[in-house]
Image (cartoon, rainbow, N blue to C red; front, side):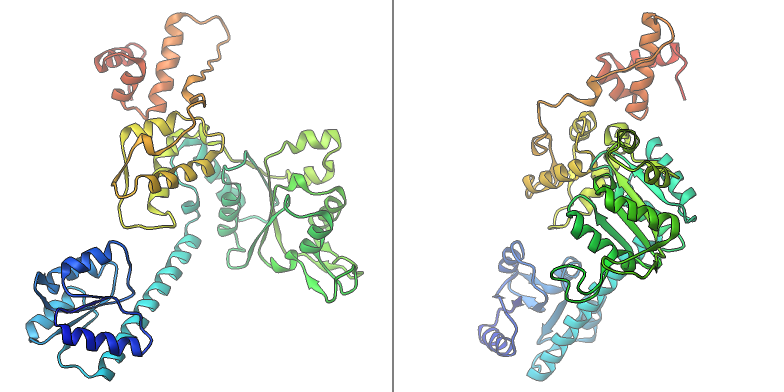
Amino acid sequence: MLVEDDTTLHQLLNRILTRHGYAVDGVHSWAEADRYLSAHEPRLILADLRLPDGSTLDRLPDLVESFPVIVLTAYGSVKSAVDAIKAGAAEYLVKPVSHEELLLHIERVLEDAALRHDHQFCRQRMQARDSASSFMIGKSQALGQVKEMIEAVAPSEMTVLIQGESGTGKELVARAIHLHSERADRNFVAVDCCTLQEKLFESELFGHERGSFTGAERQKKGLIEGAEGGTLFLDEIGEIEPTVQAKLLRVLEAGTFRRVGGTKDLMANVRVVAATNRDLERMSREGGFRADLYYRLNAFTIRTPPLRERSDDIPFLVEYFIRNHDFSRRINKQTSPEVLRELTAYSWPGNIRELKNVIERAIILSRERKRIEVSHLGLPSSQVPASASLSFTFDHDPSLAELEHAYLKMQLHKQSGLRSRVAEVLGVSERSVYRLIKRYQLAD
């Protein structure tokens, strides 16, 4: 974006830059620039220091957060140059500037911006590797137990089976195990067992030799070899065919495998982590899954809790999804207390995946508003809220006081001890909640 009020110089700069392959959008004032920036994101801003409706120096602190800025001026001074650089300007050029010099500075500033972007990407990847907790957001007791199990089993070479409903983050748990293990510097290879046909799956997993079947014109290494020294994650392992189950059992027991059509035993230097949303124990009893493979996989089991069992984590997950969505980040979105109450009360049959979709949809529907409201969520009204289903267990017929005590205790836990919210749910005053807490000795 070129911001220059001198018409002749504006046309000259536009012509020079266009001739050298740059796409240039020109404006003559900051009012025009603001309208342009509301709909576009230029790679670079080239702006005159003094414009009819304001100084570029005053605009720099906000601009440089999103764009590199080169300042041009016919009234150069040491003070203004120092002020511009301190405010974040990438370059400060005094008119008249030669075409060659201007193009050289533009090229250098764009290269620096690209390097900073690459550095930020690499740093984010390193941070993800250093902290597996970044994969699992929340502080609930259920999530804490999962983290403890990950920390316990990750340093070993033990095969791990992750069980849980669809959308509960089983692959994220597998990645966390990999990142906490001695194999963290090698590949993590994920295989979706339910999307490949038997023959294709076998070839993908074990590889094949040339001529082993029609179309096998050359040798192909499989995913086991691709995960050499690292972790092989088999997602939805309950879907694989019996013949492949037998070969996978050989990998786990003997640490060897053969490519399709091969006769040579190859070493499988991989750690296997498997996941399923099916009841493998029942399937093994009924003959739908090899019992010996199930017992081999079941050496260490981690259960990923459904979101309805970790509702305390919903505010943390919502905040994480808002801050890390993949589209425009121009507006810092916030949620209203009513939104969090709605989200906490919902039963989430699709678990974390469904929550992520709901939040991203709400971000889009809220458009330019800073606050996400209940109307933006679009939750199915036919769903029965999780809070509408209660279950208390007693070894005797409970009295009314015992039921009241159990329900109050449950609500205090669910509302994170916020007595105002407990009072709202119970339909009583906050003072009444204080008296009930005192009566049943539930104070912290």
